[in-house]
Length: 498
Image 1: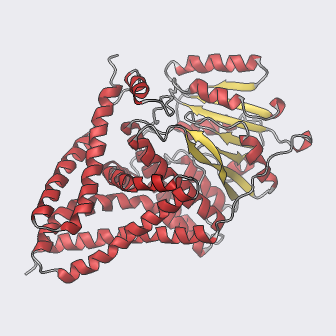
Image 2: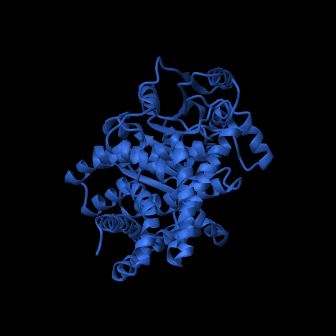
Image 3: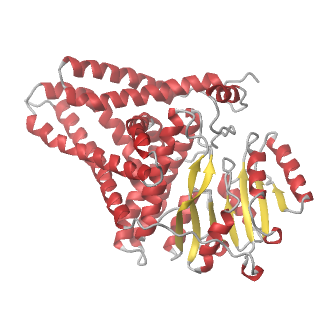
């Protein structure tokens, strides 16, 4: 006879797998659209011979305590090929440390060279990045506004490759694909690169070609200034102001363009605590935007049913994290229940849900194959990527809950260390000399406890010869063990006595 506890466990496990299954199947849908719309994109470069065709562009560089990369982003921005009299550069500096002096010196240097570059500071950090962008927009001279975060090194051809698309007056934003400066330095950065490639190639690219909503990724893109204003300008009531403005603009009828074949190089977070902070912000912000806009998307008469469905998946896909966590935790008691042999039909049905993992694999498989010649080697890291996604489930579950209940939090910046594909020794030296303080949070302790929990689960599965449970428990153990170990390791590497 089934006990109440067993009923709760089996029901919760079923519901969790159903939700993961639905989002996993969406991977098949994206692969279908990818294969259907696989044509190559032709890049158009701006003809500089007729200066009457060259619009004025403002480039905004939002900074907050970026002492290791502030000079790099300013230098690379000033190397962009564009007439000086048509280019304005705003360094939107909310810093409170020595970054202020670094920026001041750099701005003065380029002003002497004839650049229209300004060091813009506010009295407060109100609205965080959204507030800084909105403040700078008040003074922006450009008809178009390009935005780069401090971890980017824009290519000199950036404006020549993006501005021509605005000849279509309906285009409100052009986004370039991110390229990775330091994806080869560790397993952590390799896994990140795979995740981002999947997002850009199989989400941004596919959605854009299929006529669905996409989003500005916060950097590496250009906006039509009138589009920003028409959509209601930057708002700071979510911590993903880029996603928020993107949806408001597209709901107003503006069109976006994604460029798969032109990239903007950027630095990936090289230590896991910085990565967790970034993932937490993106996860929570997406839930906040869903809370704010999803009902309006469905209520809109200008948005098609297809667009509404894909927008729902786009804005809500982060809700998988609580169910990843719940599925993992329940996986251990499920071994005991399954061993009783009284629920064979139930578990026969459950085996069908493994198709969702195939959908996820196909999604990232094509994401790698589309842009890399060595995709066969890269896709071998898929299990590592899956383990990492599971390992972040604790932190991202917290983000989902906070976003759902509208708990406000500070925009936590992602520390950058000016790391490219250096040797491990050089990387460790830079991290050890960092002035960015790190801490071991309660979430790290929970991750460590879960790693022990799944170690026990692996032993139980082996003892009862429930081999079908082993792959998932090994992935959960690897994910939580990897995440907690690196958090502690990087804490000591970046720890500095002030």
